[in-house]
Amino acid sequence: MSSWQIQVPNRGGEQPLDDAIFDLRAALPDAEDRRITREIFVACRIAGLSTVGQVMEGFEQMTTAELRACLDSVRERVGLKSASDIDADHAFEMRQKEVRRRAAQRPVPTCAVCGVHPTDANGMPDLDVPLVRRWHCSAHLDQAGPTDMLPPPMPVNGLMRVVDPDEVAREQRKDELRAKAEKQRREQREHEAAERAEIEAARAERWKPTGRGWTS
Image 1 (tube, rainbow, N blue to C red):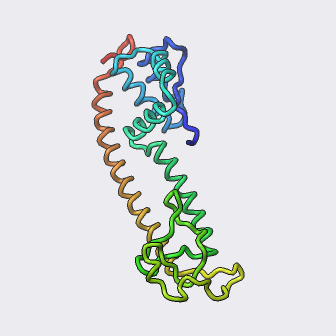
Image 2 (image 1 turned 90 degrees about the vertical axis):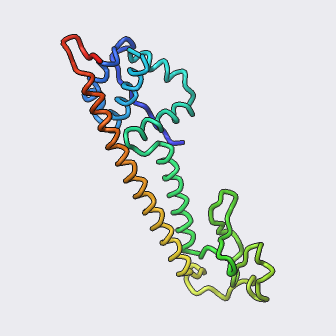
């Protein structure tokens, strides 16, 4: 789990939440942090809390997992990708880079019968299987020809590996499908964010400043 923080600026535990909300633009220069903290403060205000100290006390009673769940939920409510999704995407990207790096030196085996790839315990392509002429998975090993599972001929490149162009094309297609799915998810989040912005604007209209502070 990477390092994530919920920014909660305050001028002391007794600072009213309404006052803290008003001060956010000056207290938090980062626009994303402001959106997240404002959403938290507004939600706490609606829930009946009145001071920053009460918000901090609630955070202090939460476990690390609960804090992460809270951050994920708030980020999604304001139209941002959750911290857990970002971490998962980063970990996936790192694994894919490693797979592509190794695949550039050696093609990922593909079953000659069903087209599946050998996978490790984590479900990632297993590049440590022996290099053979035509690989067969365990379910179709009995259909392998007499020489299919024997070592291939002498490799032709300086790395002593033969790059399979069909495998490269398959990996590129997978990347395109992932990019398309991510675009669709991003467009959906933007649509939901626009709807939340309308709700937030209506909520802000109810909280008009008076000479004594904010009232609802």
